[in-house]
Length: 578
Image (cartoon, rainbow, N blue to C red; front, side, top):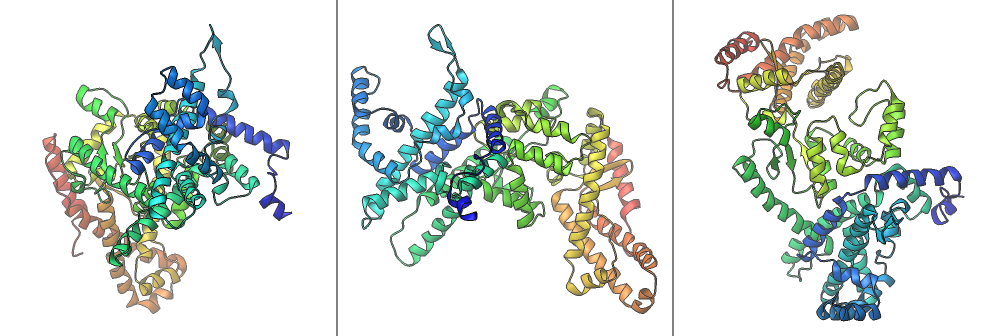
C-alpha cells in the first residue's frame, strides 16, 4: 500500500528492473565523475565562506584514526603533537555529531562506486589512480571539510544558544552543515526510499540540488532577520546558511570587479548589457586567439560569471531565465530539465524527439545512446560541437559555473556598421551547415511568435480583448534587421524597445479599426485577418524604424559600409508620418 511505499524499503530495489536501472545509472554517473574536481572545489569554497579558512586534514584524521593510531602517527612524525592534541580534544564533539545526524559515515558509499574501489596492484603499489583521486575528493576533502565545519558551527551554537542542551546544539550544527555541503541523505524532504531511488534514476544529483534550494531559502531568511534584529535591538545572530551565502556573494562581487577590470578595464556596474551590473565578463579563448594570432577556431561570444552562480545557483538560474522572458513555472521546468540524469535525458530524447538544445532529431535512438555515454565531465567539452563549451567545462572543473554570452546581448554597445562588419567576418570564417540553418530557422520562427505574443499580452485589457475576441494574429517579430544584403542582430535592450514600440503602434491600429467596428465585424474571418495585416505590417515596420533610428551608424573598416547603412536605413525604415 501507499504507506509502505512512504515508510518501507525501496520498491525499486525489490525488482530486477529497478535494481538494473540503479546499477546502470550508478555506473554512468561514476564514469562522469572520473577526475572531476567540481565537487571538491565547491565544498572547499563553502567551507571558506563559513569559516574563512580551508582545512580538512584534522577532520579527516578524526574520522579515519582512533586515539591509539593517532599516538602512533605522532611518534612516527606523520602528525604533529599540536594537531594530535586538537584531534583528541574534539573527538567527543565529533562523536556527539555522529549521534545527532552528521552525515559523514556514509559519504564515500554514496558518492563513489564499486568500479573505482578495486585495487590495481603492480610491483606492490596500487596504480588505480582513479581510485586515489576519488578517495581524495570524497573520503578526504569532503568528509574532512564537513567535520571541521561542523565543529566550527558547534562552537558557534554553544555561544549563541546557551539555553540548549548539547544534543540540541550538535543536532542543529550537524543539520546546518549537511545542508551546506549537500549531503542530506534521509534529512531531505523526500524520506521514502522508493522515491529517493526514483530520484537517483531520473536526476543527476537530486540531494545536491535539494541542498542548494534549502541553503538559499535558509540563507535568505537568516539574512533578512539581521536588519529586523538590529531595529528591535536584539542580539544579531547570523545562521550557518546566512553567513555562508552572504559571505559568498560579497566575495564574488569583489572578485568580479577584479576580473572585469582585467578583461574590460571597468567595474561590473559599468557593463552596458542589461542585467549584468554585477557579472564579470570573461573572453572566449578561441575568439581571442583568432583575433591575436589569426587562427580560425569556432569561438563563442565569451562568458559571464555571476556572484550568485556559486553559492546561490538556483536563484541565479531563475534570474537568468527571467531575463530571457520566462516565468516561474517555465524556469522551473528548464532547471529540472538541466538536472536530468543520463537515463533521464535519454528518456526525454526518445519521448520528445529533440536533443538537449531543443533541436529536432532524425535519429532519436542514436542521440539517446550518446546521452548515456559516460564521458568524464572534465573532458566532455572537448567532444562538444558547441562553441566555447570546452572552456566552459574547464571553469566547471574548478567549481565555477559560467554562462555563455549571447550574440544579441553583446550587441548592446555596437553601432550598425560594427554589426555588419562582424556579420560579414563571421560569414567569411564559418560555413553554415544545412542542419545549422534549419535549426536557426526553426528557433527564429518560434522566438518571433513568442515575441508577438508578449506584445499582445502587454496591451491594456480592452485592446487585448479586441484582438483576441476576433481571433486576430500579429505577425512574428524578428530579432534582426535587414540592411541591404546584411542581416544584423538587435541587442536584448533594443528588443525590449522593439516590443514596447510595437505595442504602441498596435494600439494605434486597433483604435483606427474601432471607428469602423461594425463594417470590420461584418467581414469573414479571412477577410478580417487580411485587412488587419494590411494595417499591422507597416505599423510594426514603423516600430522597427524607431529602434533603428536610435542606433548610431558608426565607422566601419569598410568606408562604403557606413554610407550604405545610412542610405539603407533612410530608404527602408524612414516611414514616420505615413
